[in-house]
Length: 361
Ligand SMILES: O=C(O)CCC(=O)C(=O)O
Ligand SMILES: [Fe+2]
Image 1 (cartoon, helix red, strand yellow):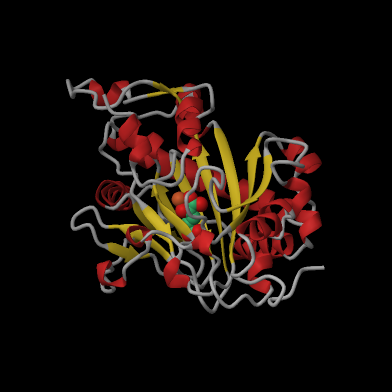
Image 2 (cartoon, protein in one colour):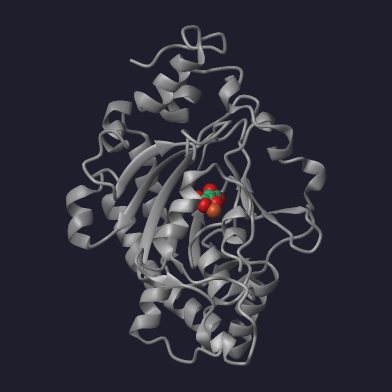
């Protein structure tokens, strides 16, 4: 049984908290549910990593784009302009049924609602596959301060593997959401690549752009002293595109490239948040922006999100597209093996744009 608040407080040695959260699999959700009243010290972030509300701009927002008519050149323009200017946008009327979005949110709550010992079957230590991983924070062994988030990360190989290995509590909802997202992901990539003079997405290009997918289900429980920590620290994604469903709580902030402020991404019913990842920034030779973002912790509400990271395959080489360089533009990024790039990202704590800077020539 989970300890009570009196048994598990800030006065406990940090090894007890780590054992409870990390090793026994209670996660920060379990910690939050003990009724803990103050933030354990290992979650206290350095000042510069907390989001200072004076650096947020409440009146600004990223574009919300209606994509019901994908063949309309104005829609493609809006998508490509947003990818260049913001690196982030929301789409509505995208064709993924509301019911599918609701089902995957329910599936997420079902998984995190399981007892710790059930979730812990999928931890790094216990999981029977590297493609299924339950964990907490981002990279606890590399971090000086932990992040207030639990997750289940699922690397998709095939429906058959997913059926055999993914947790029964969530697999159907997650698979349904993945299947339903495929058409719109292809449409978005087609529009984005056209502006880069890639007029046809043939099979090799399709593999490079979306040859592998990872889906995470994230849980950000109620946090004591949310102002002292983060849900997710500043980072950009290593994907080509990220396709993110959030619930109605809010808390995701995006860096405004023009003035360094942070902009909230408000929940819009039925919308999907799309962001450019590092792989697309590299392939576009810097034209599309993989922008830093972060999630704040919340003192009164639990939040979930479900990102699909649309990626190259691990063994693909990524670099600026030949079509982009055909005009004589100078490459600003090296050619890299995608799996090396991803390993570099996961070896360290979240650190803003350091991963993509590492790919510069
Ligand atoms: O929870 C969110 O809204 C964003 C999560 C995120 O940025 C990520 O998982 O990479
Ligand atoms: Fe992200």
